[in-house]
Length: 178
Image (cartoon, rainbow, N blue to C red):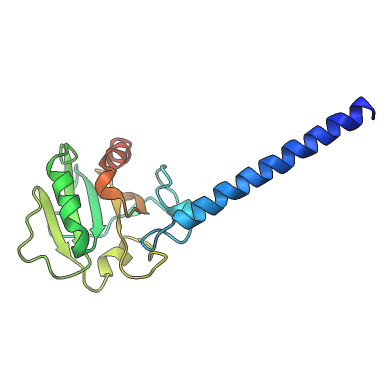
C-alpha cells in the first residue's frame, strides 16, 4: 500500500469516528431537553443581545414599570416553581440598580412574598405574549426571563427553566445593557 492510500485510510477513520462522536453528543443533547425548554434550541439562552427582532419598546407591566433610567428583569414563572426563584433572588445582588418583576402564569400568588420583586399575575399569558416569549416544547405558559434597558427597550428574552439556579447568567445579560 502506498503512503498516500494509508493517509487517506487514516483520514477516513478519523472522520467516521468524529461523525459518530458528534452524533452521540447530538443524541444526548436531544434527550436532555425538557418540556419547559424552547423547541428551537438556538433561541434558548442565546447569550447575546438584540437577537430575534429586538430591540423593541417594552410593554408596560405596572404604572411604574418599566420606568425611564432603570433596567428591568422580568421573570416568567409558574406558581409551583416560585419558591426556588424567590429564595435565590432574596440572596442575590440582582436587584442592585435593577427593577425585578415576576410574572406568574397562575393567580395563586395572593400570599406570596418575594422581596424586592413586583409580582404581576398573568393567567391569560397576555404579558408573556406581549414580551414575545415562546411557548415551551411541552406547552403551557413560558418559564424564562426578559431584560429591558434603561431606555425602555426590550433587549433580551429567553425561555430558561433553570433560571432560579442561574442568576449569574441573568446578571451578565443585565450588565451588558445600559
